[in-house]
Length: 377
Image (cartoon, rainbow, N blue to C red; front, side, top):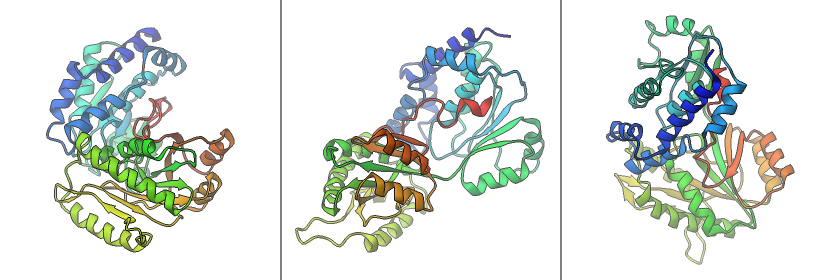
């Protein structure tokens, strides 16, 4: 059995390479993703974030807690909507001492081979533990035999796709399916400062990921919601320069136009003082760069793309708990600005939120959150 301290040291060394913008690994990833749908700035931010807190102390603790002696690999079916899960999965598997097959999505096949090459260069016990592959999902010639040869499957995707895997796989599945995130701005929060963090969370991956806030609830009345919406509009205009929009799908401009028409009906009527309750950003790549709309309170609005964010008034935390308890939406994270009590935080998590964090940190989850190291144990 390999000394866990050796494995921990190699994990920490490899994670540091991903955090270092000047490393060979980062340069390979940068070059491989230069023609991807994401702008260079979004790519750099995503690579900065993915292993930001994986140091040797944490690696050593995880390696000692979760020794694995099963040589059968874990299959990971990776998503194509964000950057990061391939890297996080590889290092979660390494912390668990597991072999892993990384199945890349059709639109991003570069990161998994880079991880396999990096682990080879780091040496044993990490070398040889990553098998980077690609095939078209649902391939009947590949998947039945492969599914039967692994001990577990970790999959990212829609609930429908996960259902198909469950029906065809004879091994346990850990699925990360469709879910949405929201924000909450307390009565004591500074609206201008809050808008800075919220704009980054909205802009990263153009809201295609489950950790992107779709609706932000503002404690107080409609007027305070409108003030925050205006502040967020200003920050989203700025963030278009620092985190530009990604490449749009063929039908995305049409889908955005349809969403705007729908939101124009649900938005609060414009006020007599002239402040619009729906703000459409300047056109970028053939469509509005963002949409901010102030709507009445209630269930979250979840368009799930194109930097479309709804701002809704909310009486207090208890009212948000009530929304979460009755909503049909499956929640992922709650981005918070301001102070709430421990009891309030616990009530929110009891309603379905898997994570409560600060607005501005929603796209920067801690290592081992999604996926977890336990997924590979």
